[in-house]
Image (tube, rainbow, N blue to C red; front, side, top):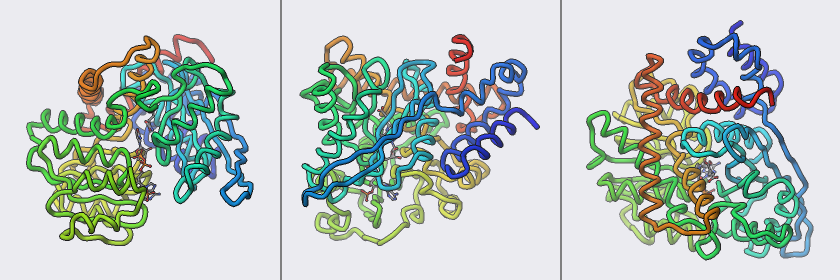
Length: 444
Ligand code: NDP
Ligand code: 2IT
């Protein structure tokens, strides 16, 4: 059996109840086959692949808090510190009822390669809890965040592990988490990113993931002799990534015609009104059914359906495995040119394969959504030098980082005769830096 197949078999055997983690490992390992074959003896001797699929540390803890009725509630907290070869652990905190160890491990594993692709000195980690912020009062969210941080603060720090936002963790949650860290640890440091602008946050971090997605998509189009102008786009999700992806797509002359949340989706042939979505989601924390009040000509549909719309570009920006083989077939049948992942692993393995076979340009999340964590690293830099850069400075750096990521993965794919396979290119380019650093640091 080849070394890659042995390691995949080991991961499958050891993690039977973690399908998302197995999926993420399979995708990366498949791409690495060509690199591993060229270095098999050295990698085997150092157990490099076994080490790369094993988190350095996994922390799980009880999170007790009291709800507004005086009832005690208990959630489970997680922080998976996956790989610190190239820098302190860095990655978001997901708050969603579906969170479990396997999901945090898949996200942490992806984060290792994503962070490497940014070219910045950040290792990979991820955390979160099965707590659902939806429908909770601000006081309940604060009670949860304070309890969560009371335990998490023992394991993180500005130079060891720097969490940030993800699904369900936005500016409000980061504020409560930061306040509790400062209170317990007694240090004012950049231990979290995505902070508010009055206490160390970076301009453009809120916009960064969505904007970065469009910067790299734009670069891919340009390098393939095409233009985003006039293209029709479907976006799924209506959270942080989706909102700012839609905003930047419009700025670049494309038209986004869909938006969705976990209960339904909207089709607005005139182009999604981003300000309306911001008000519904960021201010009112309401459902997308409200959108009709802003745009009477739009359609609202219950359930799933964004990928059935005829578009040139699809941007999945909600959650993992939201675009399956059937969806991919619809996109291809409708002439879709490109799928660029704003979310982490939103496309199933079968759908990815189908899109690649049908020559759809496919930018994987670990490259396409890296603008968020890259800007988090810029926030860390600003915190370290105790300065704040202008929006233009941060946004300019973000744009250059996304352009560089595209060229790095494009070059990596060409080096291994896999031109046009950006999945392989991203995995290889991300892996190379981490592998070199791990080898240099000995068996650890
Ligand atoms: P938000 O919580 O701001 O928004 C998430 C959106 O996705 C909401 O519209 C939500 O709908 C929808 N959604 C979440 N879970 C599901 C589900 N199980 N089924 C259907 N819809 C769902 O999160 P973000 O925008 O920050 O994150 C979106 C994706 O982008 C995630 O995969 C995240 O890991 C990834 N990402 C985020 C980055 C960031 O900087 N924030 C950086 C890089 C990647 P509803 O409100 O109804 O739940
Ligand atoms: O998946 C991700 O890259 C994020 N949720 C952002 C992580 C970060 O540290 O900014």
